[in-house]
Amino acid sequence: MSGAAGQAPDPRTTVVVITRDRRTELLRTLRTLRDLPERPRIVVTDNGSRDGTGEAVARDFPDVLLLRPGRNLGAVGRNLAIRHVRTPYVAFCDDDTWWERGSLRRAADLLDAHPPLAAVTARIVVEPSGEEDPVVAELRDSPLTGPDWLPGPALGSFLAAATVMRVDAFREVGGFHAGLWIGGEEELLATDLLRRGHWLSYVPELTIHHAASPVRDSTARRVLGLRNTLWFTWLRRPWRSALRRTGYLLRTVPRDRASARAFALAAAGLPWVLKQRDPVPADLEARLVALERARRSSPARKYVG
Image: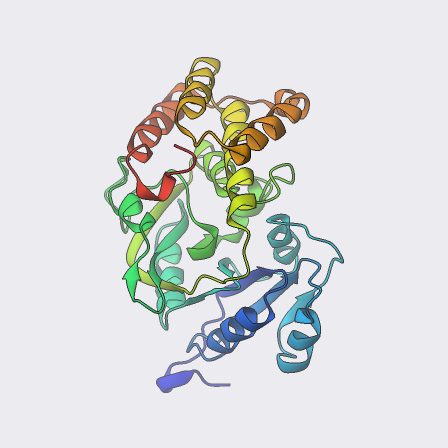
């Protein structure tokens, strides 16, 4: 099938979507992805939906590879999907986000041109307002430096809803960590990529749109995000930095039940976290310190410091 506007399809990228109980949003996203000129292959992991999501996808999008593990795998649903990916690149996409026309092709061009580049993260546009997501400023103003060939600012992490990644690099570090489940799960994966010499970059010429689903539990997501921030800190930061970071969070997060629950969950996971603890070397720790300082003033980090 030929692409839209006379462009040939681009076989280099597969789009991976995880979803749970967001049938309406997912169907809209799949319609938009299907109409992209790149005509990407699409893999959807349905994390145990109970609203007919899986049935609707199977009926309306027979060309989409639908995976139904029968339970909520969280971010690990992406790992399951990537087992079925045969293209060199994977574009992550949430069920309430969709890629701008031409962005997947441009991302693949950049990854083709720069083998040490593991991932490119796009500018996020909030719909229906058309404004940039607050996190975009954090990406654009990243304090990290990198080689001159990078297509944009060097990053220390990425956003799974807005990133195209090299599949071999993803597999090299084992994908998303099952222990974190979901909520800020990108930070650990990004750090492990950096540790192996890969680069991450923000590329403003790439665009993804986000129409936030009303089907969300923001408090539960905040609990998981703070818990995972703590677990990442204890897994990869040297002890001095880990203690400093933990103390900062204790002083600055909202003093409410959600924060208390997050700290309790984090403490409960200490046995497995300490068993898997593997601090980063000094050069990478210096980059993480720079990121930590920059994020303290980011409006996108108001819950976790």
